[in-house]
Length: 355
Image (cartoon, rainbow, N blue to C red; front, side, top):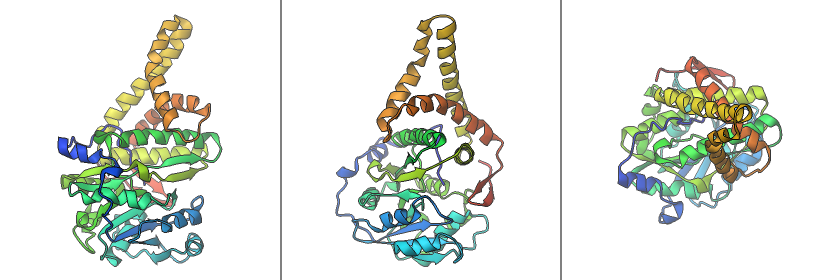
């Protein structure tokens, strides 16, 4: 699951810690090659699942293993896991309050306690061969608790897939700022000592946020005064083919999780995105009805559009429309999330804890 921190509520770091978090991967010594396990929770069939798993297996990093975790032998993902050549285990964690993904992660941590670093990868991500090497490097710094990246949503056609691609670029911008950075559980690495040593998953199981690996690991890192390293060089690709229904379900779920992590996200997010929506509407309507001078109200939109255009890997006129729509969609997502008491993820319903 993905969590976006809309309000920048992750508390300010010391000057030295902020410096470490914003370092480029190239500045870390490359001799750091800890024994690493990549955990891939699987349920159902994602787009290009077999190819995604093969991309994780085919890393140039020399000291790692990978393991897929499924709920049962009857899961349709099994045949694709076997074709990819990745080993798999069956979920066995007894954490009743945890989400299916957190149970899968806990199972792997309990069974394989002899690794120095653990990496969580979602089954819908496709990664390049240097993904793991770059993601692990920042963990050699004792002040870094989590190393993470953020995906590019590669649309494969369809209007709402394109909207999702632009919606996701906002998260990429948040990652680049230390004050709004978060751990994204689709591509996230941490040292064994973050969770207390081998086979110690009590922090996961006892966390009030155990429905989300993202929130739990971010909270654990924060509680220990550790920073979050963002590794753009490890950016994965998530292929999308969304309808209006699947996109809105996804966007509402991510937003609900973000305000669960901290309620201040709701208030700051509503203020920001509603204000941006009002500016866009005012700039367009007043420039038509009164004077073109009111187009100046669209300066912020023009800046956002320029940034989105630069970040997008798939250029097209749709970006202009999507950039206009995203503030309104975010506003709706936030207002909808305000009253959300549970989320549905891959067929299971999980109650949301109070922030």
